[in-house]
Length: 362
Ligand code: NAD
Image 1 (cartoon, protein in one colour):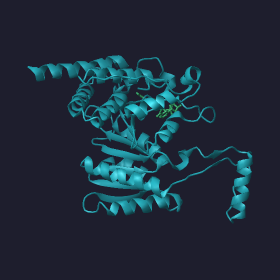
Image 2 (cartoon, protein in one colour; image 1 turned 90 degrees about the vertical axis):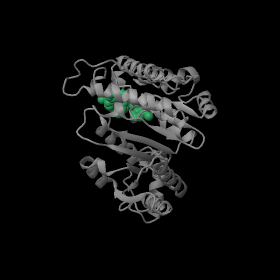
Image 3 (cartoon, protein in one colour; image 1 turned 180 degrees about the vertical axis):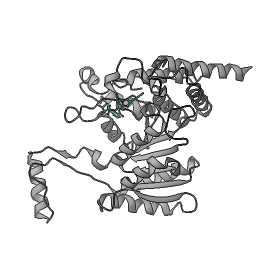
Image 4 (tube, protein in one colour; image 1 turned 60 degrees about the vertical axis):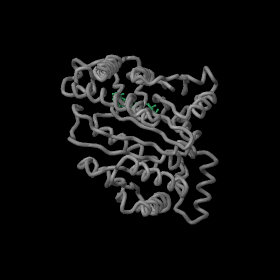
């Protein structure tokens, strides 16, 4: 377990309490990451943390702050890269009782997690690298960028695109989903997004007759999603669009406090809420622990603990539907009046689960 920083420890320890109450016996190894880990271990992503995840093959992780525009590189991106967690899976399901503009939403965002503009290939304005890159572009007949530019590279590979497309279709089959929509901007980025699309088409042909396939430009998708989220099932996206669209989808289901996620690789899976560390709320015990708890539900399912997963998800569902012990973000229209703290909400979920377990025994 990596509690993270900002609101991370509050929501992750709440999730841990819920997971411990399912009856599954856990042995937790707790590790810190991010700026907090630098003073302790000399690195924002200490080797013992990576070794622990490689050995255990699963982790539950809280969000970690990334300074904007400078400072340390994103620990989250680096963790995904080091463990080759190539698929980010973010199910977006609207639970009854959650305040939302929508009636019905049940879709899954599958985001490529290792390539694209998140590869960390960035060059500062005024640097010698940028001057060399611009000279190279000029000598290859391109319209060279202005000399005062900063430059990021967007690599998208055949291998990276094929494995995420295959993952999306296999996921759809396993989960009984009907359709995969590949999202791109290949009309403008003909080679990078063009490759992602071309490979997705090829993979889709292996699933013809079993899983429907459609293609959509990312801008058009955003408009259609906002109007008709119920028309979508599994969305397959390159890294950057996937990041943005999954926050958009969280808005359908009650906000970031309700959106769980998993970063999946062949060797390990790291479960974490979609939301960030919301540092301005740190230590206030008021943020919604549901995204972290539902990430724990995904972890239980991954571990084959289906009964415990069902029990915990049902308890979340019951507490949210009742609407009594829920955090401020689920008390819309009441200015947060009467909202529960993070701990109170987690305790209500535990009580609900325990009372269900007692009545099952009787
Ligand atoms: P954020 O997700 O932390 O917060 C945005 C807003 O969403 C909050 O102000 C709040 O209104 C709402 N929100 C988030 N979590 C919530 C919860 N559990 N319950 C209720 N409401 C919630 O996004 P941000 O402010 O843009 O980013 C803050 C930091 O988090 C940045 O440093 C960013 O890099 C980092 N971040 C980390 C991860 C990760 O660790 N995987 C993911 C996203 C952002």
